Length: 93
Image (cartoon, helix red, strand yellow):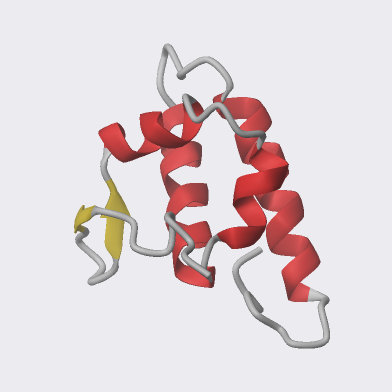
């Protein structure tokens, strides 16, 4: 099964991790599907990158429309994974 958001285009970050670029963030925010449909398909790393990008966007004077809702749902997804038996995204929350 193909999961289109597994490979998130990224730019180098200072801490050695990849950071999501703004065009990829907008791709998520403008996706016609609901976040509840997309978020469970993300890898742990992609979810962490999305959370980071959303947090940074919300820390701007004019965050993108919908970023707050996406952030809250992504945090919920991260928390769900942190307590799941398989621990798919343990430590992301």
